[in-house]
Length: 236
Image (tube, rainbow, N blue to C red; front, side):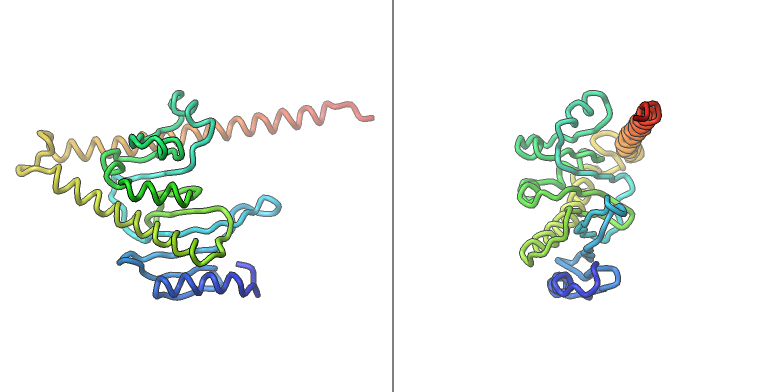
C-alpha cells in the first residue's frame, strides 16, 4: 500500500470494522471474521515496473477438502476454442447468463453445482470478480484495482464469506445425501467415490498445466521471432 495515503488506510479501517478485526498497514490488509469465517482483505500489487498492477484480494481462510479445486474467471472469446481443444475445463451450471459470463474450472463437479446455487451465482454476476480460486490458505477472490468505496468493500467481504459458507454446505450435503449406510455411495464403495473425485481434480490441474505450458512456449517462440526480425533488419 502506498505510504502516507490516508484514503487507503481509511478503506482498510472500514474493512476491519466490518470484520471486527485489525489493520496491518505494512501488509496493506485488514483481517477479522464475518459470519463465522475468518477473512483477510488486501490492497496489493502484482507484477513489477511498468507491468505492476493494483489488486484487491479477499481470502476466506479455511481448510479445503482434499479433492476440491476451483478456478473461476470471466469468459473470454478464446475459451470456447480452448474447451473444444481440451485446453480448458468448463463446468456448465445450466444458467445461461452465468455460463456465458464465467469459465468454471473446478472439481468435483457435484460439489460445484451445490456450492454455486442461484443466490451465489447472482452475487458473482453482480460483482464480477476477476477471479475466484482455491489456494493454499482457502478461497481467494480477486478484483483488479484498489476498491475504494465502502459499499464495494462490504460486498466483496460478504461474497467471500458466502462462498466459504456455500463450500462448507456443499460438502455437508454430499455427505448427507450421498453416503449411504454400509459405506456405499449410490451403490459404489466410498473408496471408489474418493478416487473418482480425486481423478476429477487431477484432470482440472492437468489441463490447466498443459495450457500454461503451451502459452509459455508460444510466448517464447514469439519473442525469439521478434528478436530475429530486429537483429536481421538492415541498419539504415
